[in-house]
Amino acid sequence: MNLEDNDEDCTIYIEELKSDDPNLKINAVSKITSIAEILGPRRVREELIPYIIEIIEELDNEDEFLIKLAEQILLLNDFIDGKEHSHLLISPLELLSSMEENSVREKAVKCLIQIAQDQSPKFFTNNFLPMVRQLAQWDNYSSRISACSLLGACYSQFNQTEKKEILQFFQELCRDDTPMVRRTAAENLGYIADCQKGDFIYSVLVPLWQDLVQDQTDSVKVKAIEVSIKLMDKLNKQEVSDQFVKPLKDVLNLKNKSWRIRYAVAEVLGDLVNHLEKEVSRKEMVTIYETLLKDSEHEVRSVALIKLKDICKCLTEGVLVNNILPILNGLVQDTSQHVRTSLGEVLCSISVNFEVKNVISGILPIIENLLKDDMLDVRLNVMNNIEPLNNHIGNDNVKKSVLPLFEQISTEKQWRFRLAFVEFLPKLTQQLGFAEFKDNLIEYMKQFFFDHYSEIRQQNFKNFITLSKQHGYQNIKPIIVEGINNLAKSSNYIFRVSSLQGIQIISEILPKSDLQSLFEDMSSKLMSDPVPNVKINLLKLYISIQDKLDPSVRVSFSSNAKRSLAQDTDSDVQYYITQI
Image (cartoon, rainbow, N blue to C red; front, side, top):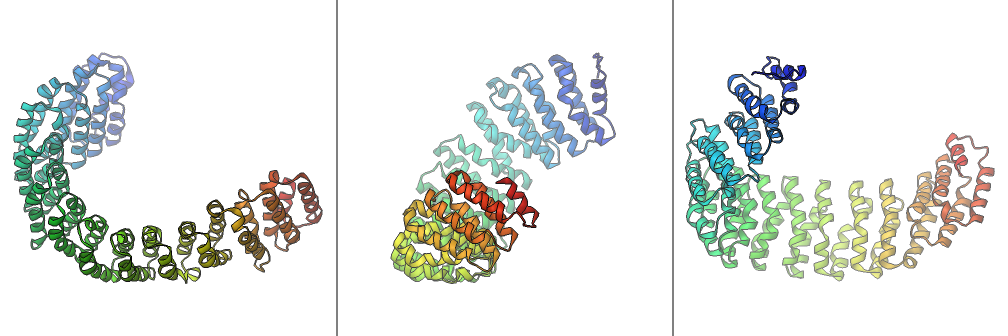
């Protein structure tokens, strides 16, 4: 490269791009934009870009270097004096997009797609199309893989005549001898569909899809299944029924089929239902769905469960009760935690598709078993998703059938589950109303005042903030006062500390008179506590709420504290005395 510029650093970096030392090359490639800034647009176009092409063609470069080089080539778009010169960046990226290493190839393709954005029709006709045409016809399969991605991503930007030529290339790539090329073509079929209308899709793209979904290579089938929804979106329900249901059923019926194929079918099943007439769905989907729920792979069973909410739209309640519920009941004992977790979530959401009597007789027994599951996450998922079920069956049935499921919750060993239940209580209280709260839930909150896990005690206090907004402060005041007093009288200092922390948490909802009354009561009881940590928390409480107290209360507490605690030997107590 003929370099007339006197900048020494620029010369060094340019030479290091061809260095045998990988570290020097990596460092140099990151400086390409700096080199470009020194050289100026004309010399970048005439000297630097050809030099980069030479490096790609002649040297044995490492993948990391080539990936960074592709990134830098893209950045050169800002150093070549306008988009009218963007075509110059195509050649080096075309070389990189034909590389065998997947990561290099993908990076180059992404850069080419970015360069193609908002370009003129002339750019596509004169530069981009010839590049794609060449990649699609090269002998090395890696070039044809890149051609598939570029055709799909940029198809919408070609004119109608060019689109016809592009489509011919694409059809050939869909029938390529190399499975990886066919797989990438299948993956990009949806981009072509996005730019076409129903008639074209039905007559041209659907036959391509059907060939791909029957491909001998599993990975090609999987990509074809995944993209099927893009085609269905452009077709009417009868066309979808005629062209898609049978191929998908046939794929499931194949011997030695990969579990990934079954997984892919399960993933699109919910969308497929929405593209079919209900009668067709009801007839075709039950068999397919039952097969997937009984699959030998837990990933397939799990994703099939997740899609049940969509499947329910096309099934009668009779089919759900007689065909689906028995299978779901069997999945309670599934060996996979993920399946049982999905089961709990979906049961709560599909309950609205059942009559209340069937929820109580069919779904709640399954939920009861899931709430006894050995795995905490299974139980948590039921807890976090049970609200739709509660809303559907009504307060009386929640009280009779759901609340008993949580009777042993306060003695549950897993603190995370107890915490989840505490967090859930305000929602349950809002649904049931205050009267039911007093009759059925208040005892839980009293028990959680004395939970041995601090976060649960704190959340229990936070709940009173929500409950006061829902049902009025005066209604819950007696519960708060009783709870705090009981904590303060506890022989366990941790609970005495909790009484003080609780006042701080709920201070925002306490009227000034009640806050002062509680604080003065706690001061008289705990100022002389034998445990330093209790006294420290009393002082910390005062510091946090002193602005809400009357001056007389502040003066009284401050003088009493300094007098009573002056001789305290604990250094932390003495520190907080200085803060008041």
